[in-house]
Amino acid sequence: MKWAYIRQWWIFGESIEVEEKHTGKYGARGQKRGDRKKPTKEDIKRQNQWKRERDLRRIIKWNFQKMDYWMTITYRKGERPSWMQMLKDIQQLLRTVRRKYQKCQKELRYIYRLGIGKRGGPHIHILVNRFSSEETGTDVIFSECWKKGHINFKTLYEFGGYADLAEYIAKPLEEWEPEELKRYHPSRNLIRKEPEEKTINRRSLVDKNGQGIYPKAPKGYYVDPDSVRMGKNPVTGFFYRHYTLVKLDRRI
Image (tube, rainbow, N blue to C red; front, side, top):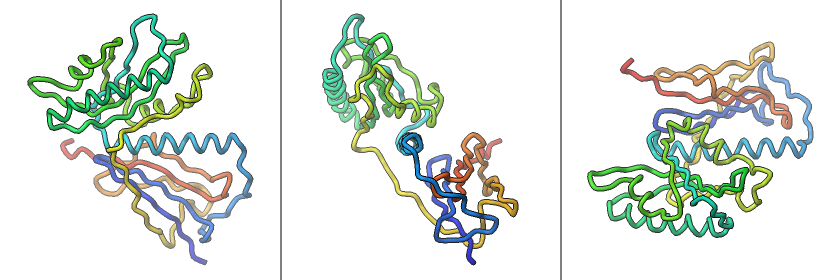
């Protein structure tokens, strides 16, 4: 009987994300499919949340750099606009900023999400591509264009990186936030890519004892240990392995 698994990978500037899984079409050495079970509502909810964070992380990695801006846009003290008004405000702000970017021969890219603090404070989180020149820059443009409050600037790197930011933007609503705030809003010009895919024949993701095999990095890369996820899918009963390969710094 043949054994094999499917490998999919997504390529970024300094890393490659890999997902591998056995399929129901093949047997696998050392691989015995566990009992299938019908997914519960919690299983589905957890899986959907993981997919949202994963997909958003990849969009961020394709379109933004570590020194791009992660901004928190706030309103003047005491102001409590509705979520509809907040949406109109950010859309108007982005139209104005986009024109200023275009005058500098730059294309604005962004992802934003509306939020309401525990004490009712409205705010808007937004990730934007950063640029600067002798005359102006991203921080100057946004600060000049936002007349309703204050903007706090951080870099993507300062926030914690791609995975942390994707998790934060895609996080579930707080109990006090209206259902309309659950969605994040990306600009239409963001790059999205399909994975490359290959069937790996006559290999397995598990050893002869049925234990998961830790991934090995090809030459020039290392496996990010925090990215490794291995286990048996409780719904399909088949083994999977997810991990990220990071380019080695050849200067070291």
